[in-house]
Image (cartoon, rainbow, N blue to C red; front, side):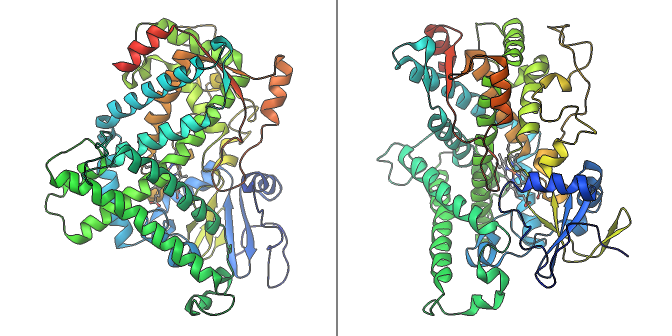
Amino acid sequence: MPKPPGPPGWPIIGNVFDNPPSQKHKTFREWGMQYGPVLRYRLLTEDIIVLNNREAAYELLEKRSLTTQDRPSQVMCGELMSWNHGIALSPAGHRHRTYRKLVNSVLSANATKSLWPVQERAARMFVQELFNKCSTISNKNMAEYEFLELLRRSVGMNVAGIIFGSELAPEDSDGHGMTEKDVDEYIHAADVAHSLFGKALAPFAYMVDWLPWLKYVPESFPFAGFKREARHAREDLIKLTMDPFNKTLQRITSGSSQNCYVDLCLLDNPNPTPEVLNNIAWTAMSAYTGGSDTTIGVVTSFFLAASLHPEAQKLAHLELDQVIGAGRMPLLSDRAQLPYVSAFVQECLRTCPAVPVGVAHRAMKDEVINGYLVSKGSTIIANIWGILHDSSIYSAPFTFNPSRFLPSIGTPTNSNVCGLSEPSIGNIPFGFGRRICPGMHLADSGIWIYVACVLWAFEIRPKDIASNDDMRRAWDDAKFSEGALLHPLPFKVQIIPRLNAADIQVQSNK
Ligand code: HEM
């Protein structure tokens, strides 16, 4: 049986020189147009299968999830740096199943509703901080500043709060719970660990990924710098995992409980063994590192999209004014009444999915798809970005147009919105099968409430761009990150309050 077609490679090394070092999603989409929705390339002896449409991704990764749920082995990142102990790189098997049971019980669609108030409070505080920042700039109606630092801290605090508890301990609390300083240090340490993870995750990023026996070389050997690097990264990762967990455990033991991931896990496991405690600690770390940068990436994309699409923003404002009004901020329970705002969020996730080529799966046995053989051991990559830019599903896929998700009769508050009734993006940004993102419900509500509250309170304008043509060009030419996570590179906007200070102050204190 033939293997899927793909770019011709060299003998022995295969497509090592074709393997895109960055913006893989774009190269994969181009290859897809040339070779079809299921294609293959080869790195040394390893087959990489790329899926470029939703049918192929569902067929291989959802329907046959039992045998495509494994992860390719990553010697440096997984074994030596210990990321195998987190959920995302944990091989298929007992440990991964146990982890998923823990996270699914607390982060299911239903269970996450209990965390909505925490997310709503975080979004309200972010709006207040944004407003305060605008007010410190001399001409508040034309405030311009880089909002990204504020957003990073707000989302970091929010996700850490959802996992370890959002009510912070006083600085002199002697380790009983996380203090504000602890959370700031945690956010910073997680950033460092995550960027090392991103670097080591690239296929064959280190020599030891090509020649696995090198992992047995003693650290003192010449050229074994990677072993020292791995040891430092491993020690930091274990500290990142255990320090906040132990502080949270101390808080719980001292009788103070909160509505957060660790507390809820322990409620479900009232007499935890050391193994269960260890599992909770590693899943908590995985949830933070999996959930913070991805959420930040999408909300950042929202700021860029809103600033360059004033017509779309105007329709969102209109809907918010009619349904919510100036008297209160939006809540997650308002979602069904705000279809245009929800379509806006979907369009941000469609155009800028935070994990553009997902996380690689591995075939655990031979599979056949579209008449091609995917042999056991192949790496399988779903090109999420490519699937969400499939022009047979989404007309003008590079155009930002929230109305594509709305019916042609418009919305209850605006019958003039000309919808295209295109299919919803569903869970595609969050991956597939037994590996689908366990935080997707939390991410979905978290992103929605940030977007709805920011749109309610502010108008976002691009800086130094006035004409519609220039805005279109700026959107087409926007620069994005190069690594495994997709987010726009820093850009400047003007953030203009739509309401007066008293309104925002009162609402954000509720
Ligand atoms: C916009 C936000 C997010 C996006 C786009 C996103 C996307 C993804 C994707 C594509 C995967 C890989 C799925 C696969 O292998 O098929 C994944 C895995 C994962 N995500 Fe998310 N994610 C987001 C937010 C979150 C949040 C908020 C959390 C936790 C609170 C989280 C925790 C995880 C974990 C632990 C995994 C590994 C799952 C496994 O291997 O079993 N993510 N995510």
